[in-house]
Structure formats: structure tokens, C-alpha cells
Length: 436
Ligand SMILES: NC(=O)c1ccc[n+]([C@@H]2O[C@H](COP(=O)([O-])OP(=O)(O)OC[C@H]3O[C@@H](n4cnc5c(N)ncnc54)[C@H](O)[C@@H]3O)[C@@H](O)[C@H]2O)c1
Image 1 (cartoon, rainbow, N blue to C red):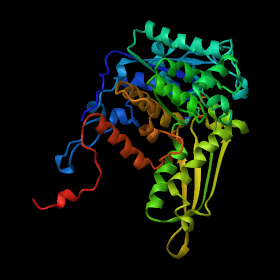
Image 2: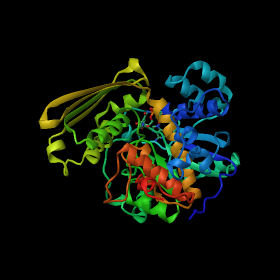
Image 3: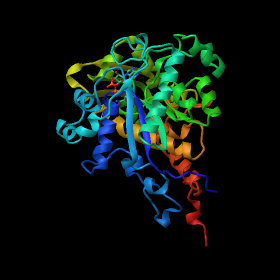
Image 4: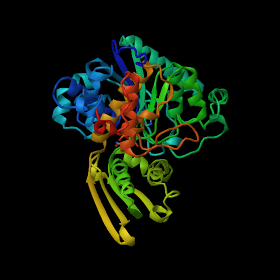
């Protein structure tokens, strides 16, 4: 049965805390694609197809023609940052895209100026900027809510979503004040330091029923209080951490090795990057947040508890090294020690010369468009079907995450089929061989 999905009428606002490399690459890329200056490669919503019905039907519509999604021309961007640079300046500074392309988009990019941020230096020690709101956390949440509403009115928008593209906050774990909406609101009012800036944005958005996705590995919406609030206000939420670069490769390769019952004794991952993200991650307390997000992936895919002979002794190590000369053009190396029949060892080496924000921008776009779809489809709370895009997918407490990218894709596609009343595809395929 087809679910009730409201059409994507009018304009969609995408508001972004953190107008750095990822956000500006996303914004410039959407403008460039909408104008036909470049192609939105890497975005499933813009270029992907979905199979409907039997293989013999040969019916593979584009995803954007199958589900009602906002069109690129109908997107209006805005955001917050502690630096005052407009998006043209910030994109030029990030040095991800060619200056020539940015110059062609200069008027639109310059027009997007960051609103004052909610910032607390103790969460991101390596940054300090002037464009920051003042007040208690409660007052700041109210100010962010006002920003969202003003942005909506000023731009005549039908809907808004918020995508966190801000820096990675320091590592910390949830405590009592994060366990219920009541405790969380009391802590906001007491200006409790255990509420991170990202949570202030998230609270303000969710309270208004505005979908929120977390592209960084911070806790942010991954706390009972904000999950509870999201259910109450019928708001879809998701996180954490855009799946790009080395972890993308890991979740492509590891399921294949596991599928063929090949053993792994070690997986050493190291990389160099020189953008501001790398600078923030140079501090151990911020790196720890990233490390935790990256480490869980292999364990979830390989399940050493089920396969002690294959993965019981796996040594997994991850290193991120800040190396300014490379800027956003990260280089990563993986050395994977595997073993096969009778325990004979082999090695795999991966040397990925990637561009971090080029991989992240389409992920952020798809998450924004899909979370808006989720809202129009009446879905609320954690959107696990979007884990395809995330390094450390948020799930219901006690529910193990699915990190295998191929299973995540099947989950995403079946969710779209479900919403549109199409038959789910199990890939069983015995029916093709049944006698007529
Ligand atoms: N690029 C990728 O492939 C990738 C992948 C996964 C996750 N991420 C995460 O996405 C985030 C953005 O990455 P980036 O490369 O654009 O980093 P960046 O440093 O270029 O941009 C982050 C921006 O956020 C701003 N910021 C920090 N705290 C803020 C706050 N409280 N409010 C508003 N603005 C704030 C910073 O001033 C900066 O401009 C990082 O957390 C990164 O770890 C990136």
C-alpha cells in the first residue's frame, strides 16, 4: 500500500551549522549543477536508478523521478559559522573547487553570510572566531529557533532541514542530563556545560519539527532526550558522521572478504590531510570522537563473536595525521593482513588519493533531500534507512547497527519502494524458474 507522502511543493531551505569545506562544496556544487555548469556525480538522488518489479520488467526509473524530492533549483541555503566569511570567501579559503568555477557563482555564494554561531571553545579547542552568539544555552536555543523561523519567512520557504557540517566536537559520553527531554531542558536553563553547541542547534530544530542530520561524529542527536523530542514533535533525525574516504572503502571491502569467509588478522589505516577538519582532529580529544566512530565499523561487519577463527584476533588501528600541504586532498593508506585456506597469509594494500569534501558534498545533499522526504512521509525519530551515508549509524538503543554498505543500500531502496507502494525486492529470484 502506498504511504501518504506530501508532494515536494515550493522551496526547501537547507540550513547548515558550519560553513566550511564540506558545506561550501555542497552549496557551490548544487548551484553549479542547477545551472548546468557541472554534474552532481556521487549523488544517488540526482543520478541513481532504482529497480521496480521483476528483472524481466526492465523498469529502472531514476530515484528522483520515482519519489517526490525537492529539485536543486528549489533549494535555498543558509547557515551559521563562528567565522564571518561569506560562502564565496569560505569556499575560496577551503580550496576544494577551482577558483574559476567559484567566480562564475560569485553573486549567489557571496549572498550567503553566516549567522552568528553557538560556540563553546572547550568543545573545539583549535578554533576561535568572532561571529558568536552570547547568552545561556537556553537563550541560545531560542535564538537559533528564531534564526530558523526568520530564514523560512524571509525566503518564503515551505520546508527547512538542518545538516550539521560543523567541526568535530571533543569526545564525551552521555550523562543524566541527556536522558530525557525534561532533564535536558532543565540543563539548558541552567546553562549546563555538558550540553554541546551541536545539541543546542539540534534541540532548536527538533523542537520546531525541523529534521536534523549530524554529519560529524559528535553525540549531538544520539541521546535519549533528543530522540524522545523527535518522536514528540514528529521530526526525522539521523547521524552520525558522513561516510566518505577510508571508511567508505572499508565498508565496501570488508563485507566482500567476510562474504567469502576470508580471515583478517590486521587492518592498519593511516592518512594525511591538511584542511581545517584535519587541524581540529589534531587535538587528541577531538580525534577520539572520530576514532570511536571509525573503529566500530569492522567489528559490526565482521562479527568476531560469530567468527572467532577468522576475526577473533583482528588488530585494527586508525591514524589521522594533520599535514597542511595536502589541504582537502587527503591521501590514505590501508594495509590489510588477510588469510585464506589453511591459514595461508596474504596482503591487500589500498592507496586512496581522495578529495574529502568532493566525497562528502553529495552525501550531505542526499541526506538533506531524503530527510525532507521522510518528514513529508510522516516518518519521525531515527531514520536508520539513511545509514548508507553514515560512518556510525544511529540506531535504537540495543539494536545493532548495519554497516555493510550493500545491505544499507538494499534497506534504503526498499524503504523508497515501501513508501511508494511498490513490491519490496528480496533477490530470491526462484520465481523466474518456476514452471508456468
Ligand atoms: N569531508 C569529509 O569527507 C567528512 C566526512 C565525514 C565527516 N566530516 C565532518 O564534517 C564536518 C565538516 O568538515 P569540513 O571538512 O567541512 O570541516 P571545516 O573545518 O572546513 O568546516 C567546519 C566549519 O564548522 C565551523 N564550526 C565549528 N563549530 C561550529 C559551531 N558550533 N557552530 C557553527 N559553526 C561551527 C568551523 O568554523 C568551520 O568553518 C567535520 O566535523 C568533519 O569531521 C567530514
